[in-house]
Length: 447
Image (cartoon, rainbow, N blue to C red; front, top):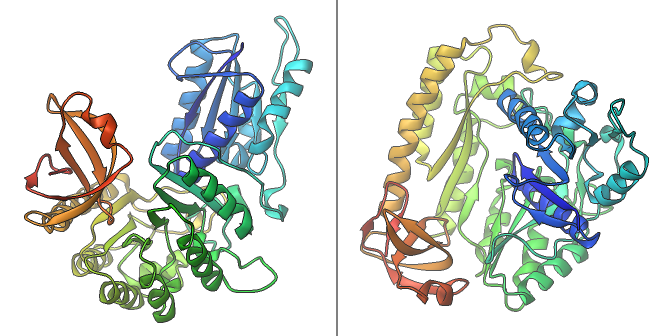
């Protein structure tokens, strides 16, 4: 039996696709082993969202070849799609597969193995990269199981039509392509039947879900899909991935608030709290409009978790603009912020903009926001101390040398409770309401 090892970089969409690729090779008789072990095939699911992601992708490809020079190293995904010529020149890569072809990895790999050159003159097997800009069909994938035992991420769409000035993802993922509701519902039903308690809808831009269908707008299609998922018997929780602020309308919030299974955890991508910066980013909303959306959610849900993404050091960001953005972040009061230093991406409008910000300035601004994020996150978690919280117990963890059962609240706050030997396994996958006592660590509450 041949052995295959996988390594994932990047987003939850990549993680979903990696698990599907693992299943495809398992069905062909491969044994899946940890990436640190010797394998006959190494598959690296790459990312290109930042320069750091590019570098990590290259590092993992080279690490795989060093681990076993005779192994077939397969580069897959966004980095391949964004730079196929660079991949062709990399001696560590034997086979390259772009996006919208991950589901065919087993067939592509088998063909390569049958045809690959042998001996000292062997060269790159080739690349399979489609013209992603004109890929009109959603690549069908069906997840049968996931590494997480209680929560499953469900990919509902691919691609993005927004073309924010800093983002290379539309270049790597193509235009919006949505998955048919019946396929999504079937996948969720099958996973729930296997014991999964919670699903998270994910995609490259899920707010655009359904806009490529014959009828309906993205908002109506996405909210309609959540209403259908709500009716699946046995499912306990439903969580949404990253949302575009403009999709959060009064009608959408009213319909979402009527779904008992929907978790009050909303990731609204912001990027900047300064209107001038948002305009250069081509974000199509103002800070004021964003705040109105947050207030709609807080008016409809009790203690909703609002999380976001923020970019510091965008081209032209003055000290005054940064301070405006920081003041807005303080005003909103997020549960979590994912903070990124701006990274120029080839082919994007922002990479050609004047007034690029020096790296030390970006680093300093990032440090300031990380400290703000730490304080706001602790304040949000503090809400639960002395209250009861509904926890989906997910795994046994050793924290500070002691065994704990850990899981998340509906708004995705991590909680841990001491457990005895054998008790953890009985609790995993079950939902209990427990009193929260205090902070166990900076990021974990104690029940």
